[in-house]
Image (tube, rainbow, N blue to C red):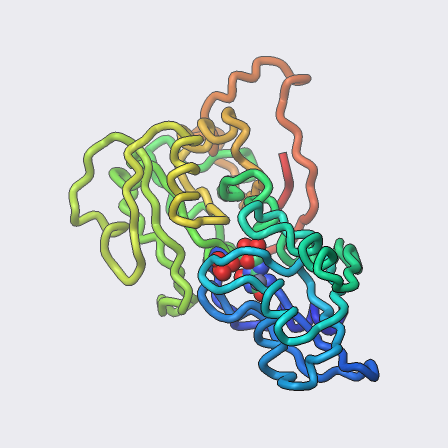
Length: 327
Ligand code: AOF
Ligand code: ZN
């Protein structure tokens, strides 16, 4: 299973709607006879890749796979059938499939006489696909809200200037995090005022290979020449003000991880709706004293009602401090 987990985490797999999955086949004498991993939506599932590698040696083999084999026809066929056709007699998996459309594989295999064991290193498998699992369970994308402020909590000065609150190192780090998501989301106000490009670039302004979808939500009309609607990445207009509706629409587009970079009004709408799952804050060692808050009114009037974060990481990024936590 450790080998299967390593395979699942092979670098270079494109960000997309599917989980990362690895599989090792152990032949009748217990030696590995084939292995495989999933390379992105539309390609072979890990089990099918491992079966292809093993050929005839899959007969009588044990499949060790990081996710419960699927039992549906989606972009590809059911792995339950592929395993049985190949003559696999035993299946050991880590994580139960949280995808309702595909689950039921363990039961179906057991009913067909295959020896099935689940839950082996399940926590590690879950960790690898933590965002995907969360999204599947809730049937909506996971939301990371990112913001940058001065040490006294200002995201812009009173004259409106917000470039650059945080350091080049923090901006570089932000681009790295953007590239791990599949969608960047801002409001129409941000587009109207700041005209951001919202693509993923490295230090030298070179576009990185994976460009998340650039989604813009809100009712305000925007001219087509705004930078977010141009450049080397897709964009999507969401004509809604309601965070629930926006996420439902993004879910229809098979989006699993939204990187929210909107202004204070949009951030407050998501926080109030209980739709911010993770916060990433860059705190720059600067003081403004006055200026705009990162988030608008949350309806909190007394300290005991403050929203608390469970912080899971604090890092120094250049001169700034990055805090990551769950609300
Ligand atoms: C994967 N790779 O190796 C396994 C998956 O519609 P599809 O064909 O892309 O199927 C996606 C679902 O299949 C996925 O959500 C998960 O439930 C199941 N197993 N998926 O992408 C794999 N084993
Ligand atoms: Zn499958």
